[in-house]
Length: 354
Picture 1 (tube, one colour):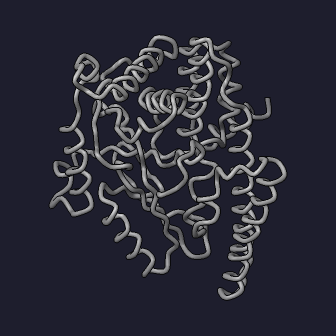
Picture 2 (tube, rainbow, N blue to C red):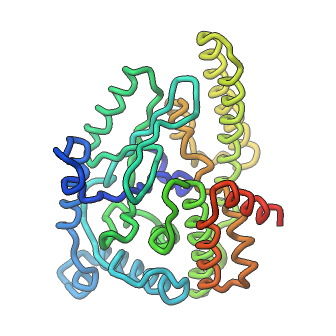
């Protein structure tokens, strides 16, 4: 992205299905063609993790990381009742830091994303490219149309169970917690996915990730995850969401474009000032989010914030109502997903209130 390597920015995970597009679309246009080509290449790179672990000639550190991943993978199915399939039991060395690059775009004075809709996966606020050059080229064309754009590298993605998703070499750079949590998150999408409601899907999977990580650490005799780091992520996300709310009011004001531009840039400078105060006064100088904050800012860069945690407390309340029974929790999630959008959001609001 290249954004900071932090869990807050987990929107780097791409959630679309390659769709066997050349079979479904006449002509196989260049965008869909590169999706198909990239996915096929990834499938060819897979190898069973058990085979890697059994080969003493393979790198010792690689085998250690893969062994840990398989402990988490077994825990996911046995304790969290997530799908028991070959996903994350195969490995692919992709030889690059990101598997794909996402392109986000918005109008210059709006936070409404340019959406792209696909069969099965529904509509999403980005397009993914297997080559960084293609992503940058697509962003440049959108810039020429007057749109704000942001290109973000993705270290892992899910095909929602349509293929045996591999552990990627890009994922093995993460610490133990993030590696395990990502496996839980992605398998949660395989357990349930609601096309067209990103906030619901990501909040649900983020709760499974967080609760799963707590239970995983407890099973290994480890303390709960670092609360300070989680608090920093929440504080930073809230600052960004505040900026979004102020920008939304600005864009709805009807001011002339020149004044709108001045106000827009002023909001980004305010975000940087607020962040600097937060970092020095409360975080003891931590520079965890510096690369994101002090890089170029525009509307498109703000898009992913809020998608992953909007309803997390609601799903936590739902889990508590099911008395920590994972099977009952998933059934309750399915019932929520079956509701019309307005009724679903009303139910989630009710859970938040509780």
